[in-house]
Length: 114
Length: 109
Image 1: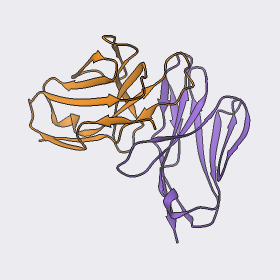
Image 2: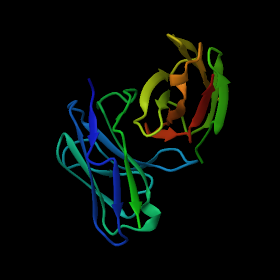
Image 3: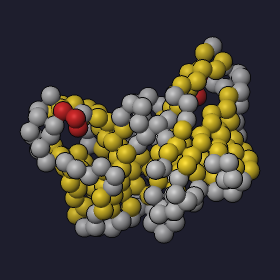
Image 4: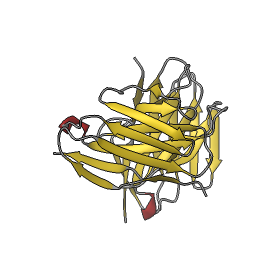
């Protein structure tokens, strides 16, 4: 069965801290994505990656960076956390080569910045 | 701009039928997804439509009209476990996914 695992379900950090969110998938998918989900808004794409060491900005990349050193792992980094980055963060993966392939999501990390 | 509209919340009764609508205005169209998301859990794939018409999958069906920029998800024989948010997402001309805010469905006994 398809599995996307996010390292933490809940995380509390302080303003100014550097925060790492980790995501691992076991499906050998080429594509990986980071979203944030806020009440009343659709999923917003932060960054995505089509291959190892490749990254592309999404709709809201400011204040974030990513790392993809291995195919199965995609990390989201908050360089200097701010309170407006309090949100639910979702990682997803999908097969490449066909845009109609659905994305498979992790359970999310609920991040609070104090 | 690109926009996807869904009702914020709907309530239905166990055993009944409910239709969740999604209208979209996007730059191009390459298909539409429906996902289900239970509270605190991952969104899970329900359906993909790219051609007009109705696609049935058990108790769930999804309909698409490209000329009207409209889709709906139909849930029959509602069960309490169907209480969840339902997310509509459209693939635009650049093959990017545009997400709606989701519809929270509450099922009452």
